[in-house]
Figure 1: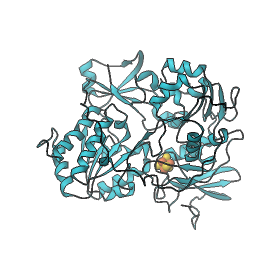
Figure 2 (figure 1 turned 120 degrees about the vertical axis):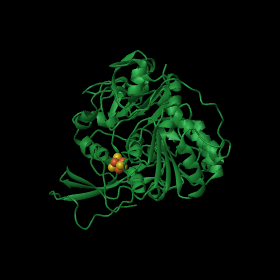
Figure 3 (figure 1 turned 45 degrees about the vertical axis):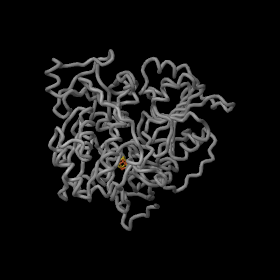
Figure 4 (figure 1 turned 30 degrees about the horizontal axis):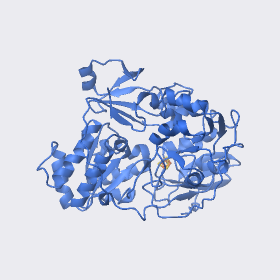
Length: 500
Ligand code: SF4
């Protein structure tokens, strides 16, 4: 969809040009209008005609587009010696992110090399039976570890609308955030119990057992049978746990009995690449690496040393840990500085945005580095996919631990920490723990995780038996450096694991 100018400019500031674009800072793809005076950005507004943002534009989008353009820490020139990727059949590994690489880059990369990786989850089934806008019409909603405020910021409004229209919303999560705040009932459970909740719900719905351990299970099972506008929202975090198949299996078994809607919420890509796990396992065998999106933050010290020894090229926004470890570094064009084809799971078609700003002079995009024949088309990304209940998932028991780690973004994401004022919202990389758990374990000020000590914050907003670590801090960011998650997690492709 092409957005037109509004009849009356939205800004009161002096400008001489108005341009439109879509924001790809998260999965909402909000349309916006940008106002310029010469080459200077003077204002940015959500486009009122766009059905995703509906005239709003979130702080994250503003920070990215308006803030990053002026960020003095951004890489503007090539750093270190830059080599061309080899073209003689060597194994070239390409790691893709979602802010600087688009559908064309991904298709080009897949044509160029069989070794293409990303941290986004890929699904073999339709990610949703509803458009996010239809969440507001659901009368019964189970939100399972689901916080669109982190991954589809603006879509949270549809849940707020549903609540205000009187929907019965049950939020089951291991940390309190926006969905929990608006829910009719909220359960704060450790991540394994969050999965157990869904499994018990599927057992009650299918008649295997009469009732579940939580009264909300019995209420939901009854409601799902009688209210057609019912929906289960599953957040990506719980799918980055050892129990992903159990979640899908329980969702499929519920859908076989009742036609409850579902949406998988988060950084889920409908296009398949290899994942972070394969990247970390295969890195040693790759001859040349082309990286975007700072994947070194997921590396432990051993993998970081391997990366350092490789021929590599990083297309980066900031001099972060990946830039520090790669042999060549080029400034990369951000999504608003180039034609960009965004694609995310809750959108049926890729969305094209024109370039809104000029990129830094030496900045490149991935498709300029590798030969690109890919033609982006407005394809229906879900057309051929089955529903979740059409697939079968291995039935494994839910292994029990005593304590769990949950490593996820918090308020600001990766880019936020490079921006002085968003970084100021979350200055320290701490471990957050429930008061009851802290008392039980005798914890007061610090916690050691895999040889690294982090300061402790005691808060009732995190579930018992759960250590929550904001995951977007990293080494070499200039204000208050943190510890990269690759050092803290034994399997960094999982953001939920048992703590021992
Ligand atoms: S909600 Fe997402 S797409 Fe919309 S402005 Fe914010 S970051 Fe950009």
